[in-house]
Length: 413
Image (cartoon, rainbow, N blue to C red; front, side, top):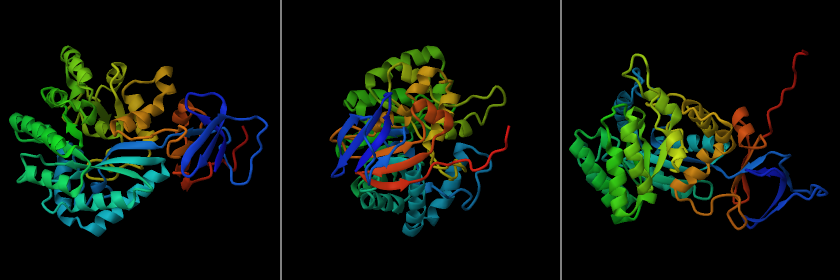
């Protein structure tokens, strides 16, 4: 297979990309005299990019909004209550149907790598078993990392610690946590110690829902960063949400950033979900409720952007389009300068690949031939026009292909 007339990120010229045995075998500047041959894919000057990475989503809850009740207050905590009502209805067939429908949506929108948080505060662990099964079943189509996520707390939910250990034995790839939702500060700190111990015991990555609240006194992030640093696993740890950071004063943040930088941990922000869920107890002025993406990035720390939810008790919209999350994130975080635009796609590609520790990611000779074709010439034009995903290629095989939308009739001006 050969892709011709393709643009690559941060490059101005056109390229020819050759694929053999599922790998990128050659990447060369386009020969202007080159003519298309049968079987070539003509990119027509559009951007060929590494696949999008979804580093934080809840596939077990996807497509369940309103079942059995809607989250009418729109708050995070009512969402947890509504999900608690839905959990007894879970079964293997229900989960497989909804997850496959959601994955098809993600594939159509250029995603090939996914980290999904799966609730372990369910004695049956049916969702954990089913997602591990699907992960293995679909490995040729998608890379899926499964997080053991204790939605109602490791130590505040009956038998929560044992369920986490059981999830590790079932095959979870990542250890999760939610220290700010534990009943007390002491239990929150204990949960962080527990999840770090589990990660060390089972040699797994860590991804913690950390300080997803507007409370400026919720400061488990510093505890997580310190424990990760002490254990020597900072690069394997991700702090998701960290929305309380939006409410921290600048003096404390200055001190905190020193620790965060030394720890080497990663961050994930979910712009559409956070702008919706946070600030619910404010009148005016209302907080935006996102973590300090701009400041973390400027300080040299790694931040990925994610969707979090698709039509579930916490967020009743969602369409699988990471470009939408990126657009929201840059607006909300006031990252609207030209320098922000020219590398914007990093937030939904390279940055998230780094925190997921994906190997051989990117359009490089010898790497797996995984790529997407976007309508646009560069990060800026793709972002500005919310470019369509025209092609999703995995190991040199087409997962999805669509024709660009075109206007067939327009009024004369």
